[in-house]
Length: 327
Image (cartoon, rainbow, N blue to C red; front, side):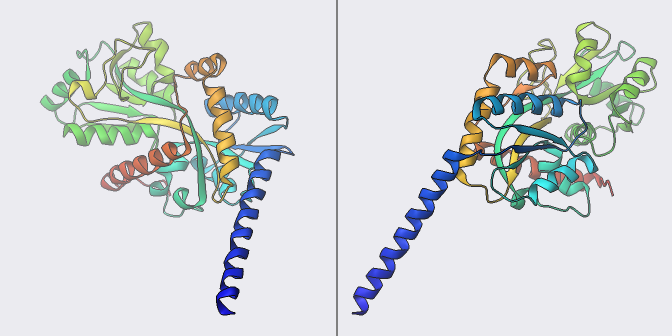
């Protein structure tokens, strides 16, 4: 009798699991059956917002429901990303955010409202923008190797600008300084434009920042690209060597990705991943990303999860060694 009861319980459990799996498949098949909120934790008009609107438009056309872009800027992307982390994990609230809220910010802020590793579901990498080290003819260096040699010969006399404290440009500067063991002076600015003005005027000798704003200057010969911080040379500036090929272990990029709340149904994650990959692989998708100096991403949720972990560990070390804080 007891054996029969155990068999009955086991059979009931199997049926329950089968029903749950079937319901999950049904949910994914019918998803979305209402508008989806796509939170962008940065102001309208920026590169993340523009790419998000393209993806939202294409997903809406393909899946038959509106994907509404909702800009929720503040705290370096933490405010909007936190809203996603705390949302119901049903696939109707997702985000297109950047490497800051997904990997770096948890070490820059003493108090974070969410933990990206625990509270978010990785969906797909959208793209990566490499950083560049630039100078002008006022500094007699044709590449990063020569610039570092000049700086080593005059410790503390070479100033390197970045777009602001805690930005990826600042973090990459610290990575460069550590990797080259060079006594450089960091000069933070409020964005690229004032840094570029001071570089052209000779107040600083170089800038480390995302390559987007510097592509026209390099192509026109107004600035010298000393190195890009990607694994491979950037297609828009093919004559600028990587830092790695010059012997420096410096890789850094600002990347952006789609994520949702923790606990999202796997079938919905896979559906979103598949459809966004199609958008990224389209001529329009590639052109839009390249417009901002981005290398097209794509791939699986697992690959994005791995990237988040690797980047988080790398920047944790840099941030703690340089004692960088934003609050």
